[in-house]
Length: 328
Image: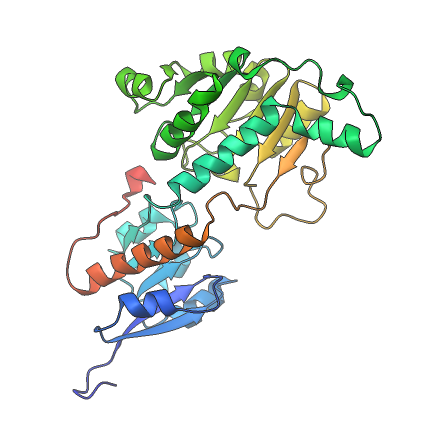
């Protein structure tokens, strides 16, 4: 209780994997806020921690289906630490009058750079080259055929902030760039140095396909068995967006059949994946553990911007990045 008899506003921090709440405490300084922390490993755990909360700051692992949202009578907003909101039933939240927001404008350079690292690994055949060296084969046989970057086409599926960042970093290497995005204009694509084409055309022309889309009902398994069949033989798939964009069973089939040369993935459908997940140790798959977003700067920026959204809510100000059911 405060001196005036008024209860502090409860903000639940669920699923944050940092040891301290110093960034959040600094943002809320001067406001009567009590931070309650929980790993959010289960629905019961989230409900117990956030029962009195007016706002939740949510990490990537906790899930917020309708039944969790309905069990929190004081909840006014869920703000994601990050970009993707596929862990939240945004429609159920809207029906309950609970606002959802995210942080779409952090980690752009980090994800773009990590994506380019994976693309270059594919373009330069790093995986077979490393395997050959480990096996004592000290020649070019393992990486042949190896066309120069200028002879390869990269297809960007999604041309938002990160897609533009990837394009700008790839241009100096000389790749031909294609882009498929239902929202982007031909002018925006040209400004990024890419040619805007339908997704089907991109899949058939690109040597490397890289994904930069949110996970929604419309984009889940966008890279389906049919989409993989349209990709040119020997192509690579790169995904630093969301694992659910890809039908992983169909991807494994395409790799085993030799239709794809390989895949470079920073995200998987289930995270963390099971220890025996077949893509983790596949000889033609490069996997990183959902770290494309991370740098010391980015993690502080993410936490600060998410907490600032909650501060706006508590001050009666409009949220800067609300997410509607149509946009989720």
